[in-house]
Amino acid sequence: ELFVLTYGALVAQLCKDYEKDEDVNTCLDRMGYGIGVRLIDDFLARSAVKKCRSYSETADMIAQVAFKMYLGVTPSVSCSSAAGNEFSLILDKNPLVDFVEELPAERASLCYCNLLCGVIRGALEMVHLAAEVTFLQDRLKGDAVTEIGITFLRKAED
Figure 1 (cartoon, rainbow, N blue to C red):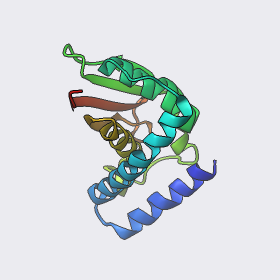
Figure 2: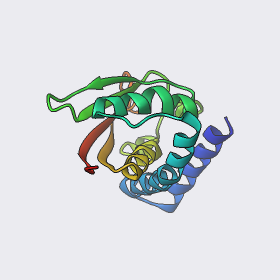
Figure 3: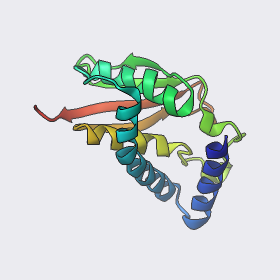
């Protein structure tokens, strides 16, 4: 709960510091990336998971272990490409928005939880998986669910 409350204050301050939502979104992503780069070591040590053999396994690990461990929720995972490199994490409940009613009309393009995208991208990069991570749907913007899209771009060869 403390993280959720302080996160709201952080986003509010960024909105004061930056006029454009795109700048706030970029800042949140950059901050999340830094967190993800550092968090992966903790995740690997605490979870004792083995190396994932596929993108599908990696997406499941993010949803079933990482989200549960750090946010207390388990998103559902769906593959959205024939190539098997695009996945969606669908959150029925997003704890980061527990104390947020709605976004102000003048902040319509703000991606309030963009920190999560950066965290996922940073953590994946540290295990040699380049990925593009974006919000596809957001309950704060009137969508039925919150959906994070992960597109795996390439993996380093062993």
